[in-house]
Image (cartoon, rainbow, N blue to C red; front, side, top):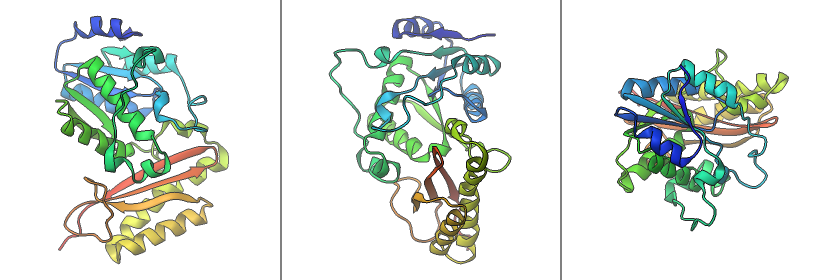
Length: 282
């Protein structure tokens, strides 16, 4: 059954009132793939009703980034959400999320938003957190589901919910990968031919880093990952080990998990990936 569609805040308010709770929200920017479908399934497991937003958020794109060419596949997205049993799809215009004449209040991501993606893409996380907080206010979900591929985003949303007392249970869903290891992403649509093959080096490098970190040291694991990416002709923007909770730098495996995150430009696509390395066994 095709889900109900709200294209304005007023329609959303009316249709949301008819949904049995608890309500789960899956925010997306469309161009849905199997990873998004997995998020919807995870939401279904935790709630009586599932709302999916499909909105390409302009405030999280910087100058010269791919907002205008970001893939928009509305008909295919709606068909996929019908197959997954979503109850309501919020597909607003920009003016419904950012009304003309609004005061421009935004959410400051704080220190967590100044490293990794935040260092490379200034203003990105202010845009992400602002639109997520707006979606929370519009949909009023009990639960929200996000993918772990965008790990820093997930960490920031959890911190925002905790610090601002938003009362939403934020669930992280594991990264979904292609058979060759490439993390699923809407931006994979930009890849073709040799670039698509080269892109698999990101997940391969992370696996190599994890193995080498366990065998020798975290520093040698990162060095081996850089070598793998260099061999594939990929210049990284960052490849760093961080604490998965506060994103502070980590230089060795210990008694806690370590986040290893990478970002790189592969042909026309800017890609990110990560792996969580389990604690070293003693």
